[in-house]
Image (cartoon, one colour):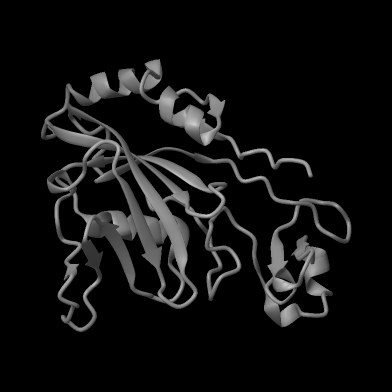
Length: 235
């Protein structure tokens, strides 16, 4: 059986395309990124610890993000970013697991004894090399894995708490009817054994399960629950 090629992504600073692992290494030495950091150091922004995070879907790793996050930002802000770029569909609860603790959205102000609030600053808990499981929706669950790749001391390169440095380049499969790049999928067919379920807009309209058609987008949440994209960065 042929091995699936891992999706590449482009560095936002220099445009170089690499695999997920290659990108994590590249960003540590990217000349254009260092130039952006030098420009940021001229600003009046607060100097602080900044964390390089690698986020991927926990099962295949095809979908991935390389982020830089301010140490003074909170898990709540990271949760909001992940929801905006990849996950939000129906306002489900979510959770980070760090050591013995679960950092969870409060439901009506009540939490389990082992749960903690997401309003904690990440500089108090993040350590390079740490891997953090994350879940969105405790019914049809999306599982992510967040790795703290590195940290640096400096000024943030933007006014936002999180910066997108790279993400996977989405390569849609061909439509099963005509071979053109697919834009839609059938959530009825996707659970059939060895079934194909990707369609272009034209053939999605004539598919027998038209009521089960959803958008095919650059997100590990694609085809789950009510998720319909657009899977775009929030800023």
